[in-house]
Length: 243
Image (cartoon, rainbow, N blue to C red; front, side, top):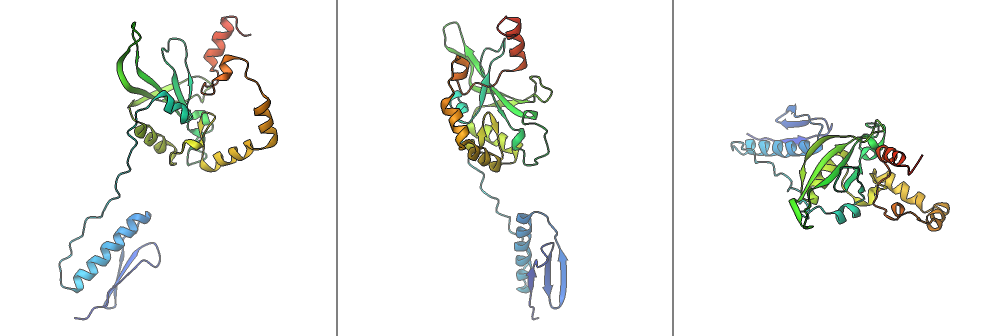
């Protein structure tokens, strides 16, 4: 028997197998990678059939897993990655926050950058001898939402230890590859939005404002400090430090 097999996906919606004037069509996939895999399996099937071999599908080779950064999460790393900290009453340590609302791949998923963020705090503390106590190196990780104008940690996700786990979490929420250069002013931005902000920052009036402004108060001198929360403003008023 003479056969002239042909496997094609000309219409990009399905795979067509032509053999001795007979066409079989099937396998419709929206995912391009899955479509390519099925094309390869279809070719293997036709070639095996024409050569009198039983068809045995080869396992599809999966992509190698992405290597995660095993480095431990530290305050220095959080600073370099664009996180901002705050510390409310009865919080013994700094809580580090990065807003993610502006970076969502679906632009209209959130109404504000404060709709979703991640907040981290250490699981260890200093004892009376100023030694580290507790689970050193482990971090609490919460989802944070201030959409109502109030501080709200609405769910504890899990404990984190490594930079790789934290980066993977941010990528899963935003849908964008991690790039700390896009973390500006305490908020993760879409790549195109971050580039626009960087261009705007090069305007002469913006540069003049940055270079001529003086930081008199201690709270202004720490660029990693987050903005004041409503609870902190209320405490300042009650304490007589503000009106």
